[in-house]
Length: 279
Image 1: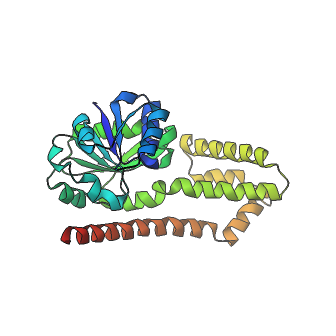
Image 2 (image 1 turned 135 degrees about the vertical axis):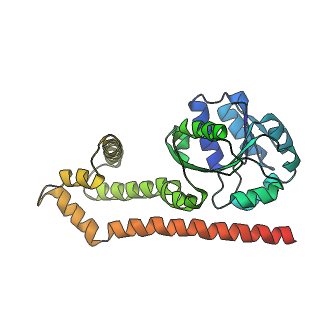
Image 3 (image 1 turned 90 degrees about the vertical axis):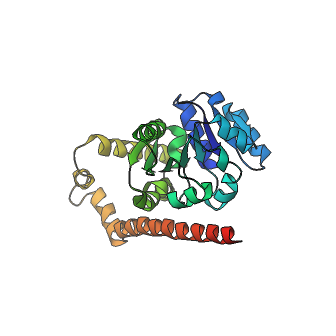
């Protein structure tokens, strides 16, 4: 598979690096991470994972068969500037929300193989839910390579580019929704008399068990819910409150709004890039 290089050293790059190393997809010496100026961050990653780090993007491109664009979306122009001529047969993998194939191609100044991916931060423990979309220049072999890359850190689904905003709103932001749910459950547990540590363990195991039930069962989640909900029982009492407070509508609206925001950010980022190019 060759070496893999990350332009950008933020939380998503670290999550992917951690997952790929843990899954033994790459050895530490086969991973290089670059950023513009934050030496302390690169030193931290190098010490933690044993990987190579550099401020030299040209070196990274020359050493890597896969180049992951992992900078902040607004920094894509600066991140790619200076390496356009060095891009030849490398596979470009972008994890930048809202940056289209067209925009990346325009900045590169050439047609090349680009895969857009939307992983989430659970990549760090090999549990990411990732969707990828491939440009027309990507070969079937490269798609399989990219799928293997992300399957090493979770699951990977191939979608069309126009579906990626929905993926961003659902699974890209999804871990935060679950963490927010756990925050509320912990608060409730303490208020009804449980110790924080006990509540945390019970909540975590409940989530793990429910997730596994959904994964292995042929039953729809609504049926699994009904099987837990005895008439006039405790579960029904709790579910009734959730329905009265609009739990389902709130969650649906949450995901729709996150999807809309992904689209808004895409337009905003691309407008900013056009403005920069005109200057």
